[in-house]
Length: 78
Image (cartoon, rainbow, N blue to C red; front, side):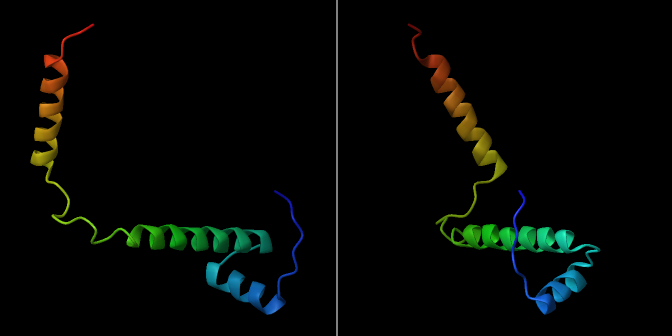
């Protein structure tokens, strides 16, 4: 998407230096990607520690799947 924005020259220069970008566009894209990545991570952090018993083990997941499959096969078909 094309857009025109006024970016302070010193900020853009720093962005190019930190990202090692060779063009202004590349620097802006890299900075936006990093910003969005950090925001997504911050959203995930909200959920850390919300599992009371932690994550289930692989064996527990397989047992749940097996029970679900048994229950699905035990239902009468219409």
